[in-house]
Length: 135
Image 1 (cartoon, rainbow, N blue to C red):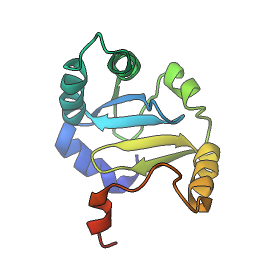
Image 2 (cartoon, one colour; image 1 turned 45 degrees about the vertical axis):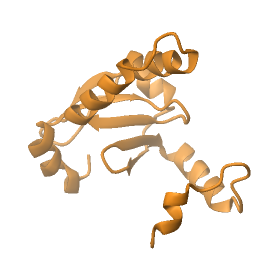
Image 3 (cartoon, one colour; image 1 turned 60 degrees about the vertical axis):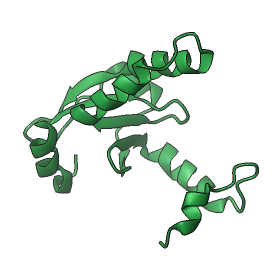
Image 4 (spheres, one colour; image 1 turned 30 degrees about the vertical axis):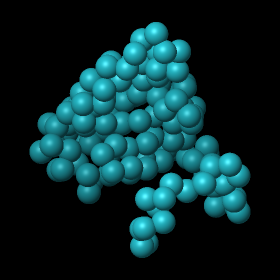
């Protein structure tokens, strides 16, 4: 964990976090424990007879694993999650507000370059809320 996040994570969640898979990309999602608990409650509340909801429940909750940041800011990611995200020696930790994404450096660079090269989003138009943002 980069130094700039360590103190905040120690204060916020005592280094207790949850890692799970991303259902859309080959990366991991890493949440402070309190934020994960809120998300988990919402996922559990989804109707289990809905196939899409059940898929999300199985994948996100089923792969959710407690991880603890040690005194040097390191996290031990279980092999099953490392394999899913194709993690090797070099990784990218990408901040996403209340969570982090953990990517293999190679896959991240490839995806990032692909996203930067896209000149249109096809059928996926930006939500109206994005049009009010000034970046």
